[in-house]
Image (cartoon, rainbow, N blue to C red; front, side):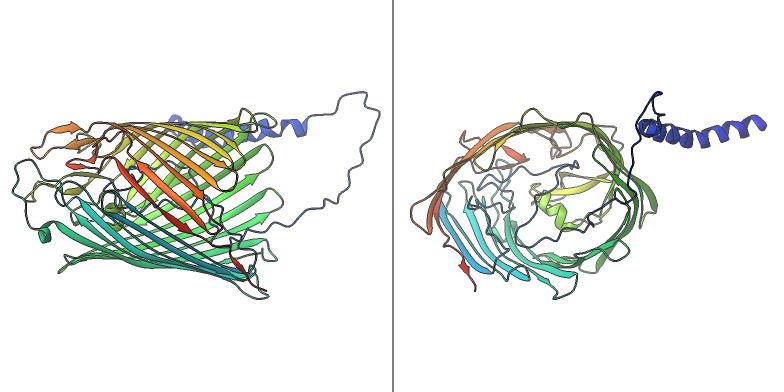
Length: 558
């Protein structure tokens, strides 16, 4: 009994002993005794002037670049112009965003037409009032019709953004509203199938919702900052399926001295899925408590993230370290982080547009351990390498729904456990805003599945490269190359197979012909490959689109 007690005490205290050795290692330089024979005395003032920290306030519509540091599993290949992904990724004007720090109004209208009877229209109007308030309004429409029967889609929507800085108060509010309508056609018929009527294979999906947020633009007298966001979204199909999703987040951070801060964040979500008399409820609540340290050489976050849903509770880790290996150009990154995703009907549809109505929604929990290296070989050339091991619980996968008549739709299955080994490398070369070259390679290996034979629909290899070149202020040229290995899929007869990989090259040009007018053109799928991202659904092949952009100089307000 005594031996067992001693063994348990050793296991319990070894973590504290390791932490003490870690702290002594990084502070040994400051605790070293001075060398003997020192003849000088350094007088250090007790007063240390500091600049008070305050959180950055983001003035819309200048949006921050997305954070790509965390790994996510991608189901969809970026838009190929007229491919059947139905996620609108329009060819936007390549000019700089308008400065919102001055009072002004601006308008941009972009229109074009392509070889697949594809009209394209996007109008954008924005205004700002000298950093006190701002708004923007966008409307878009995009459609195409391919060579195969019912190979077509259409999408129409509006997006409204706005912000307001309260007068003489350190608070700001912002929000947005979006309405989107998409028409989806299930054109993936097996050979020899009798073609049905259009009403039986067409579906219309409608999204309406938005966000309201507030944030404190300056720290309180006690060094505290906070912000909150409330999301409300409705998503429905024309067959009576409807989803209502609500989410509220409230992160709070308190700064301690110059390099330390503690944080507490609340994240609560609720999803109601309904079709006819059947109702399914999916809710989750998460808390994040963490400690953050940041200085010139060592930055780390250490925290815990307990989450609760209808299945039960689980404790997720939140530990990350960034250590500067030399004085300027090399960073070592490592971490052990957890992620909790509340799956919704809308998110699953965005991944696969030919999805049948899900009968249930389960939440995905992921734990990731990673190690990486970032650096710069020159002022213009940067690189990053990262390896990670991820364990997913209740990972959604897509398999052929054999219960349907034409077997051209997919249903969601949840894999209880999936292990992913992930390696990512990227390199960037950039000279100001004139030249940007990039290349990213991602390798994935999926194993350790419990119920499913393969990781249906997940890509094992992706390689993306491209360039952005600007000549003067009136000519822009963009090129993108995508290469991937096909994903595993389940055939209608229950046998597994793999889709063929492919290479997709696209390019676009934009050049100014008058003071407020530009011409643009885009050529996609230059190799004219009829590849399939999802089984039975080939993309459109070689496509071409051209049009004009009307963008006068913004009107400055006095």
